[in-house]
Length: 393
Ligand SMILES: Cc1ncc(COP(=O)(O)O)c(C=O)c1O
Image (tube, rainbow, N blue to C red; front, side, top):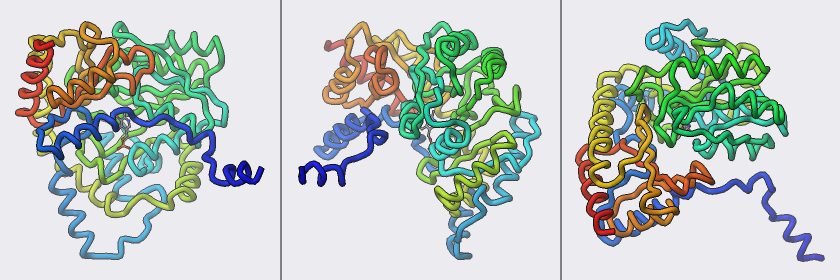
């Protein structure tokens, strides 16, 4: 009895029981190989190899020497919010009021704020499978119910209006979360598919969240913001990917006007404000456009090396790499266990990739995700190593 009571005092909550990222095991195994002197080619981690653009670093340096770096306004420094609003005018020719822009600690915090401000406990929210796992896990931790919608290559792995209507008819949905370009597939929604999905969801009273974190990294067609189609959607974005600022933990949301004050209250209580140094650097990052476009051209070279080289190496079945920096390859000709495949690829060829099971508990067994945000030389060598390894069997 005493033991039971004592155990209860340190027992974790049920809601904290979210699955870990399997890729962490791959990363740990890669680190062991490197510690023993091996050279691993890293295609597993979804982040740019480059650091923040020079104007961001310079602004951060100047800020360090010039002030106390105290808290900022909860919704973000006014000049940064205004700069983000200008970005919508410049990039999308859209007028977005700075008042609707909320600076967040990466898009990760944006999801928490969106889910808390939009949904009640128990609300059901549709997410595409395969998809970025934290969508499901954050929803679960907050007491909402993620509703996995299986997608296929026929819709470029996008959730469609029909899929939403039929899931909603089976059991009502409160929301749907979409992403284009998407992780792990690298596919994009066509502008038509995006318009159709938003229209279908809103007609049923289903709220839409659009994760636009990979905007800027679009190769097939220009990525379109969900804001083009509706002022009622919540858009989530970040400086992590295109702007190469993962570790700065800075992102933003564009919320419908009635959600701004609730998000202000939530963020004020949860975080007070977003790290000041990162906000200052982020505002200056917009001035690093030229260098960022050069980095994007590097991704395009990498993408070409992989899409041309992998079929020759034996991996000839992958989704169209429309955007982001991911290629999702079908490995079912070689294995029905992507975790084991990734483990052997790492141990025997020293190429680290992410098993698809992280993104899709069912069909992910047949896929691995390759991230091409590294150096061009590494991509060419990865193709060589994968080809040699598959040939050896
Ligand atoms: C699709 C997607 N959304 C959101 C994130 C979270 O990024 P951050 O919190 O760094 O903005 C990631 C990170 O990999 C991602 O791939």
